[in-house]
Amino acid sequence: MNLVWKLLRQHISVPQFAGFFFANLFGMIIVLLGFQFYNDVLPVFTQGDSFMKADYLIMSKKISTAGTIAGSSNSFTKADEDDVEEQKFTKKVGEFTSTEYKVDASMGVNGQSVLNSELFFESVPDGFVDVPLKDWKYTEGSKEVPIILPRTYINMYNFGFAQSHSLPKISDGLVGMIDFSIFIHGNGHEDRFKGKVIGFSNRLNTILVPQKFMDWSNNYYAPGQHSNPTRLIVEVGNPTDDHIAKYLDKKGYEIDSDKLDAEKTTYFLKMVVTLVMGVGVVISILSFYILMLSIYLLVQKNSSKLENLLLIGYGPNKVAQPYQMLTIGLNVAVLFIAWIILFFVRDYYMGVIETLFPDIDDGSLMPAIIVGLILFVLVSIMNLWAIRRKIMRIWNRKD
Image 1 (tube, helix red, strand yellow):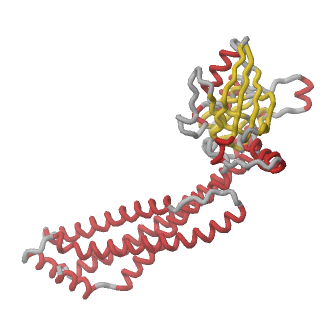
Image 2: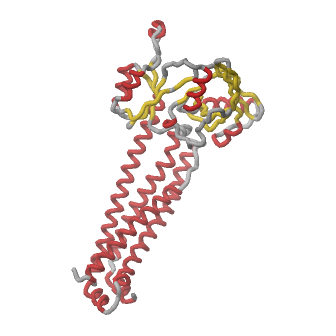
Image 3: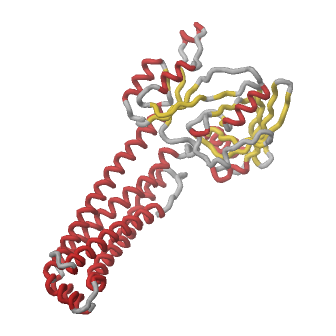
């Protein structure tokens, strides 16, 4: 082992290994920083919408003065829905199903009544709601119904009612403080349900309930009644597709432009981060080749001496070990330095983001740490394999 280390130290090229080290470090930082930045910034565009799938649009028909006077319907027929589903930009289409019966609801916080009003519920297919199944599940006969409230409800409470009545403000983590009672009347039945608020969404301006509850309650409280949906929820592949706007204009449909702009921004963010991370991966690959070239040159310079060591009893593993330890040491140093730099850079830009968006979640470095470990393992395995392969070629006298 000592003999191999001496050979390694005598012929090692510091500039070559320094080139590998800094190239690998640069590539690693780009990949980790791009990935971490995406995870930290994404909530700015999706905050409050964690209960809905990402790339979707809520589509409705435009309500015009002429159409109102003429009495034209603003609901979607089955043919309309099929036409939307056939468009190239569409991945999936779902209907908003509304209640066909009368609903009264009251909302309270800490025993203080906040809202008493006649309301209506809507539901969308469960595939569009991004919550754990155990939270978004209704069992027939149960008196507890999961609901998602519009964020405007909680904003009105926090910045109006709570402030004037000295009540505690409610965040997403304190939804358990909300008492939501539901009174349903229809088909000769009157029942009371408890609404279990699981969160808020600013993409929806309606109270959302599970599809199973909607189907059961409509059948129980309003059997035989059915209305065509007035809104469709559409999952699209690319929110920036020009064909979407052209199709909407052609058909006289509309969507919330703010939500479309948010989707476009999120999509472009994904594209930019993917491009930046791709550059980092390319740099890392080039640094890998620089290291392998340096190792190959070292082994080639000492091939006759290494062959003699193998002939006098040194095993291939012992001969390869110093070279492998050198590469692993460099990779470990790169990983830890990249983590340290990432920590300080993230601390800086998160300070700026939190100043602009005080309610944003702090997030965690764990995603970047995991990605760094994965890259470290992959690169190290390739390094070890390449070095052993070169030594085995000498062992088999194929050089």
